Image (tube, rainbow, N blue to C red; front, side, top):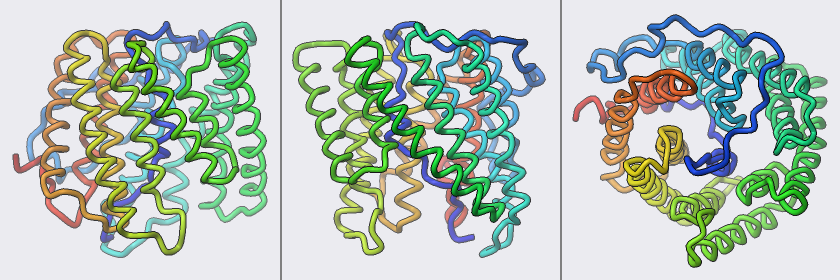
Length: 377
């Protein structure tokens, strides 16, 4: 295979799910039953690895799912973070069935379906748990439930397409459409009436709607302006990292290919801008982390966002600055060192550390057509 590709994550959804250290406590529901058991205690081993690991077989996403399910079921991991972890764990499992294939070969549908199954199962459990919570007065509960159902419908559609089942594809597609509308309406209600939903959450809800792309971009631009005004008056919700995140959403929207004949110059400029903004975001989160106002999750999300930019640039053959891969690899080493320094693995820490380990493992096989830069430095 010329390029190893498991799909571009919707960056607007990732970026708008940022959970700051200064935010209010998670409102994820408490479990109605016993949580899933943790993986073995050695499932989150040391992250600093030798070059030999680059060519070693990929591990599975099971440990990350296990730790994340445990934290989510205990109300320690917000739904948006949980969804990120499940997506990366699935990417690891899909990568396992593709990375060892001969060049230009495609994995069997059954192998891909097997790799997709664990995430769908975890999403079903999460949705059932949130439904059982039945607390309409809990902040964001109803909107998060609808988000969980929407992502589950996406996963069901993906699996149905691989299985060649047009009936289920149609059912899942229609379900997504109705859930997207419900989710948007609830986020707007929570924002305007209850004051619970944040601007990024409303923006993410808009991104799911089946509406004119120009209207979506207008919404993203308005979010940038609003966040910048908050920043100008010194408001915490307009912190510099939030401004960078809102700007990054717009640049990625401009960079994503939506036509059969994209403008190469616009595409490359958008990706170069996104690469620069995501690097600035990582640096800013590092600064906040040293002051205790950002988390390992914030750093990981920033690095993963830049990784998605690099994957997209590679996929569409839009070259980034020559120094960018080295810079991105250096950021990964810094992120790895921070994760390795987390010795207390209680709470959500185990899932956050394992998330970094999975990102590092994926990065080692992101670009099989060129040598991994990070292993040479």
